[in-house]
Length: 249
Ligand SMILES: NC(=O)c1ccc[n+]([C@@H]2O[C@H](COP(=O)([O-])OP(=O)(O)OC[C@H]3O[C@@H](n4cnc5c(N)ncnc54)[C@H](O)[C@@H]3O)[C@@H](O)[C@H]2O)c1
Image 1: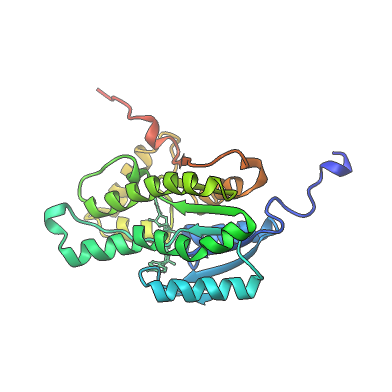
Image 2 (image 1 turned 90 degrees about the vertical axis):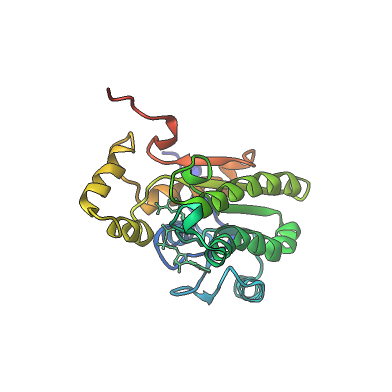
């Protein structure tokens, strides 16, 4: 390889990123990969972050964004990844749980981007969000989660349009089933966890569950200059889940 083709600085060199929910799972992997690619990174999380962050609280979000800006000398990139499962069909979901699920999974994205927006406008930058296959395809028993993640997909597209004139791109990733503490917790709650895990693999055409790095690598691409003409995209990274279903009769 010729010397000029070696990108010593990294694909995200110069970027200053806040990763919400980066204390665990996908967000933790995103923070690690971004740092490996030369970005400065501040992790905001309820637990295990560089700064305390509750994305449900406007004050907490404002404080975390201000702290990230102070630590890194600015902000070019936000990865709105914090989220939690909301299990239950509509009739099983009371208003409190609905509101908290939406606050965590959807309004938290709005609050984070809103606080970061003036900094992104100043520097030109990138909004990234973790949506889900369940923001595009419904499943039974997760009404609030699906509605929230569908909101994240549409919010991303709106932000792409609102941001274009400011040099801001907005994209989200729709992960399939990824082995993280969240996913393992859901599997463990099933009556037969081993059967549930086998079913999850069977639903994934590529034949294995995802790893956090599978998702983080997609975020690296979307944040990088390689994606400078990519905005408003909901990128499925799901082992083929959304491609369709085998008819096995
Ligand atoms: N694991 C999967 O299969 C999967 C699939 C599709 C989408 N997702 C999405 O990926 C994202 C990351 O999930 P994960 O699987 O890595 O789960 P995880 O539980 O390992 O990590 C989620 C992180 O978000 C943090 N968090 C939760 N509520 C928060 C709040 N109010 N404020 C700040 N931080 C908060 C948690 O403390 C945790 O560190 C979530 O948005 C989730 O909905 C996960």
